[in-house]
Image (cartoon, rainbow, N blue to C red; front, side, top):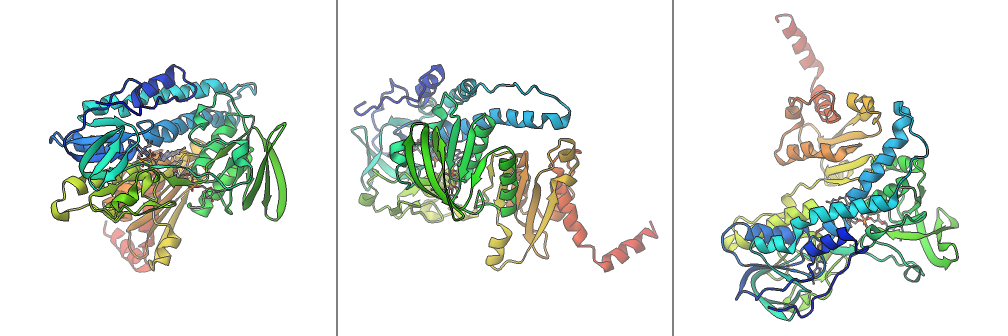
Length: 515
Ligand SMILES: Cc1cc2nc3c(=O)[nH]c(=O)nc-3n(C[C@H](O)[C@H](O)[C@H](O)COP(=O)(O)OP(=O)(O)OC[C@H]3O[C@@H](n4cnc5c(N)ncnc54)[C@H](O)[C@@H]3O)c2cc1C
Ligand SMILES: NC(=O)c1ccc[n+]([C@@H]2O[C@H](COP(=O)([O-])OP(=O)(O)OC[C@H]3O[C@@H](n4cnc5c(N)ncnc54)[C@H](O)[C@@H]3O)[C@@H](O)[C@H]2O)c1
């Protein structure tokens, strides 16, 4: 047993909740086990991808020897500095959004309501601590996984060094995730900035906040902080926020952001950050104009960089690049056939559910595909995603333009939520559902939903694509009235109506005469 390089980790503020979090995911009294003679699998990184691989392999009850190495907090980004804290924060901010809509719903709420920022953040920490036992070192030990806390690094083609010990493996999995990219803006380092790694440690509300990057992180957090009472300026390089999404969807959100008082600076070039008595001053140009804004804090959500450093990948022939991460084939195998990768370290889809799905592929391909038979492929996955703004934007599959570029003829059915009764009764008409299908057939190839609860609706369409359920069959599915998911049935019915040619209409009319 050893504990040579144990690093005591603090997550600020070190209150009872963060102490409970750390006690679960990086316990101070942890002693690394004596390594087994040889592991079937050694996994580096205990974020979603690593945890799912380790739990999946060890939990099968087949006596497989599995080791899991984590240098910081088990649970990775999702639990500690990603999905969980951001969604807890968004939940509080949604209440403020509801208050904003209350008057229109006939409920007068005193304008003196107060956001207790410290309590919002304490709730976030409490929720995170409460969930953390699931990803804890103790739980994984009980599942039969040898948990090593320390930094993992390849020592040779079949060994990994951690905490002064050597772990011999048959197969290894790199699941080291990604981190926030530091933007190249003069003076920003000296002025200091927040990223997802420390923004959830705030205990005091920054009165004025600059958010750099209009991707999912920037958009979700800009709206949340604005609703919690910060003055927010959102800087984005592109001509519309969420530039991977449907422009029309992004434009709806932009309008909401402006109405809620977020200052949105598009097509911008941030030039310099200077520390002044009032705070941090950002100089920028946008659409030919130069300007500046002074804030208390800067939050950066400008993309992710894969954690490839320090793994000694060169020594084991694992190719990578610093932008896209570890190079993998469709089976998630790296350029070293005994080493696989999963999650943010190697994938364009940087989502928890994508990391989870990739981990399952890795379990199958490393352990249950002798001679490469029956391997699962990454390209076969259908991965939906949701940006949890209000309204939410959910997407799945191909966009119409991308499909057309590939030579597919595509038709789009669009249902605006102002035609969906439940959206009307709830004053949530803003948004739409678009379903893209192959022209001339009912095969769905993609969908975008902009709606208050778009994330809860997209899975029906994911099921349809995965199980090849076309629009005709969806039209036979009874949707409870009134629900916003009825939009899907409306779209399916709209497709069915396109099949009504003058000839079929004549035939139907003829049938009515004998019925
Ligand atoms: C603010 C924010 C909000 C998000 N919200 C969502 C959301 O709502 N829904 C969603 O699906 N996704 C969301 N994501 C994305 C999601 O968090 C990631 O896609 C997911 O965590 C990736 O999991 P992973 O296992 O690949 O990597 P990570 O979670 O990054 O885990 C990698 C782990 O490897 C460890 N590690 C790195 N190097 C070493 C080493 N040498 N030795 C040992 N350990 C090492 C790290 O410490 C880390 O714990 C969000 C991300 C952020 C930042
Ligand atoms: N709800 C979710 O599922 C969720 C939420 C948050 C994050 N995530 C995941 O995390 C990933 C990273 O999120 P992200 O928002 O950091 O990255 P991103 O790459 O998706 O978006 C960042 C945006 O910032 C812009 N940008 C970069 N530098 C800039 C600068 N100097 N000035 C102005 N704009 C600049 C880029 O053009 C880009 O569009 C996402 O792609 C997503 O996979 C998912």
